[in-house]
Image (cartoon, rainbow over all chains, first blue to last red):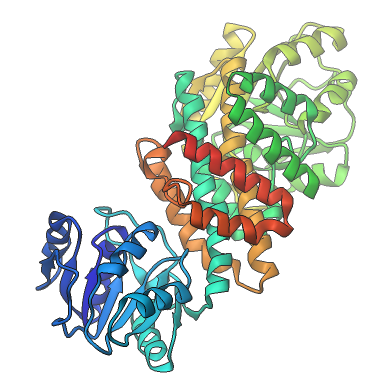
Length: 264
Length: 264
């Protein structure tokens, strides 16, 4: 397939080369900032960096919209696609109905829509990820697009699921809890050790093993440890005393402790 | 050195074999439940399982107290050690002064005290951990014990630090945030996916990569992603609506979101 990427950010940076590796051909990369489009094009075979959202003359088999969630509305309002084009987004947080609605409102010609959501966190510039073990969640507004996306998904990954927008939202909520929030807790831990001139590195083996154990277990709850799990008031109170000059962290500590204590 | 373990739980299960591997000799293992002492003794060279805390006749060079934090008081109140014995604990959450105080109160003879805290999470029965990359935090009430513990630490691990009780408490608070709480968030994520018949396995590649990125970065805050980081009210509100029938999780979601939004 010939493919155009609309967006040259974190997802596109990893997905575009992965799709070329399985034999597809990226013909164009759009970015609001042409330098970003150029950077991504430079690691692809023969992609053209573009800064114009009028793509009426672009005959790509697939248009992949991978811009930040909060840019989707604006990009769709300016996007001009050829008749019968297939436009898919790669977001965990946006429903298919939303994209469908935007196209119904803004496109003068009929287009197909779908979702190709790789359940992974991507960083532009970081070593290219191996997609083989990345779950791909697919949804489409018609059977042909669905088949097209499943075929593409199965060529790039061994884990391909048809996932409805409602299910995708559930996965996204779970991912925010397990990933975004855990990352933030690690950031708070780093704040605390750094403020006391202790190396955050000391905690890294513990963090790695904690995650290994949680993901090896039947349920992470089976391997929960720590003062809250033991209902150890003495240690919990000592920790809250220590955190008293960081009231927001102390409040988080209290609420997470209460949530753990409620389970055990 | 000849060593007696008081406690046959998670820490002892991994530490005792590791100390034998570097040439020490575990002579006895105490547990309140003799079967636990027997199980640990069975994986050691020639250790004797015991259920009596009167160790007045035990000439071990080192007594390692590795019982749950909330059992330390009671065990110390019944423990009888020979004169000049060295008793150390392995806990992140207990100060050296606390152990010193318990011995001053309960021991009829003078003993030395110290701390040998491996900054890792241990599970009894799980494959034996390689201690080489596990940070060991050491503290002692006298220079000889300190030297003894540092020597033992350096034989078992490449990362050995003298860490005061106050610093250890900071590390422990940070570990609770980064590890215990992250584990709980993964448990909540599993609850949510399971309730909707979605496989938690789908999230595992994402969780692994999130942690890899967080620990590779200069600071986990540098690689924070997600709706809170983007101040994406639309997605945040959709997630809170979804969580409305789980009020405690919704409250956690709100507070963690506010904490992330406050940083960026």
